[in-house]
Image (cartoon, rainbow, N blue to C red; front, side, top):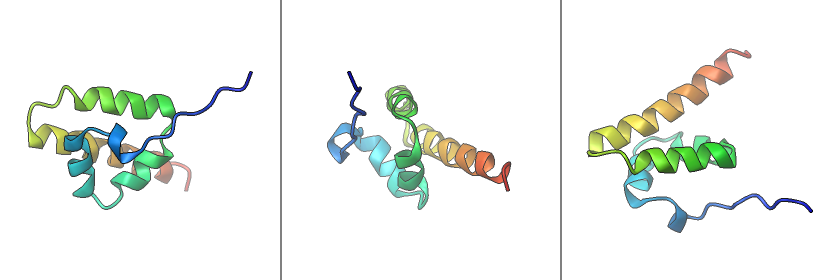
Length: 74
């Protein structure tokens, strides 16, 4: 039986996380390229952010990690 990958709609992403990603031009693109497990982990981590700054740091870390991994293969 083939597993169906979860599709994330805007309703699935916590509001604070969506707002933080809206502040970072690359964030939604990076989020869409994450595996389903990585997306779930990011959403779980976002529930532990206790401030706007912590949420923005979480998004910035995600984006920076993606850019670092991409530059390693250039």
